[in-house]
Image 1 (tube, rainbow, N blue to C red):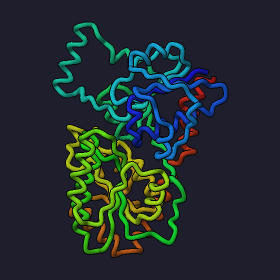
Image 2: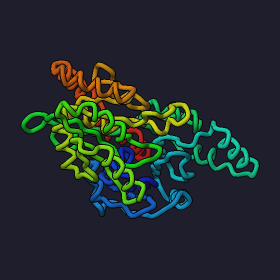
Image 3: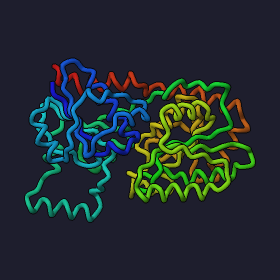
Image 4: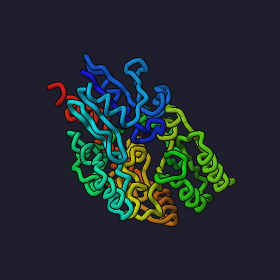
Length: 368
């Protein structure tokens, strides 16, 4: 069986890439399967270990390919799995599965409708033909499912990402007076808003706690500028930056953190720019599984990951985040109840569950 996996965003190494690489890891383990990986750049399997995913470099063939090349090569495939934020490349494979991370093109906006009308008038109907060429669409959450229906006009199945602790979830020597936030450092449509977290933490400085900000960063000037701004904002506060941390360091931070903060989507109009909200929230689920109690802005998929007052705490403005954190620090019994409930809740997204679903939905229909 010949399988192709296409991901134009693989260099980002975020939650979506963990989802993709988990499918790749399952694909290369199947007997009698040849796997091709289509990506704009040569991938770095060693870096994938930061996502707690290991795929031997020689287990697949890498092809640098754009959408047109993927479409052409799909004619020789039994299965194509394509990741997209809009319309995937048209597929000619025997079976085709598209994973829609989030449809970022708002086709309900006037400018987008005009472009679509012009395309129709000139006879270019790429989007409907490409969408019809797929047998199955997968999304991360009900939040993403609703917007996929609205913007792409297709029905998708919700398959949440795999969630597993990077290493042991139990701390050595007890949990510290640490708050953790995990997310890439950059400014853009999916900004993790570490600036909001730093501002909220300033109100807690007298409590003698630490804030640890962990995330990936590329070499683009806007990324380095963003990091410089955040460091300046933190000033002399006990805010620690862990940039491009290893999997071991991530595990250590998860194990020692008592609380987990998340701010993606704060300040965003959810009707005008839903793509800027969290599509699911793998880092939050991982933190819960490792025993850190989450305090999250409940935008997008975060409201599906965390149950307010049951497995974590919602906040809507930085002063509310600071106040909620103070309350948990002062009420150890409540914190322990939330911690236990969060761990139990997060187990539903385990790696084995994800792998079984992928085999049933993606691979087995081709093998029949």
